[in-house]
Length: 182
Image (cartoon, rainbow, N blue to C red):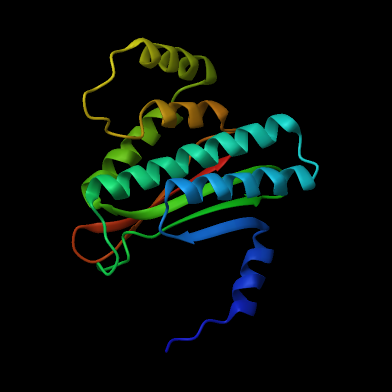
């Protein structure tokens, strides 16, 4: 049986000031319960109310995007790279809170997401606001593709560019992660 050094994991979390982290399969109930814990944890740290709301909103949106993607792809336990598992964390980077999420994705999907993020990162706050309003008024697609209006809302709440990282895995897969500073 493989062993894990929990002390080393704890030290890694402390080094990067990870406030909370979840790794595993996401469900609607788990997202809700973890969200409650996140909100309480931040309030205990005496975070500003607006920061708590923004972190919570970004956490919920990222977690739902991950869950919806995994459900749409039909990921099940036991597949290579554990595609049914994802990670989400909230940390303090010394100046701001940040929310990060990552999951296994098809290479083509990871590339499309990165392209959307690069596009959003090129917009200023006013242009993000206009695009958000336009998308609110636009007819909804019959089958939601994910990472649409929610990603725009995340970009609007972010203190700077969204950071996306793609790590190649075997075959057509990658691990894609997004980090949002609030």
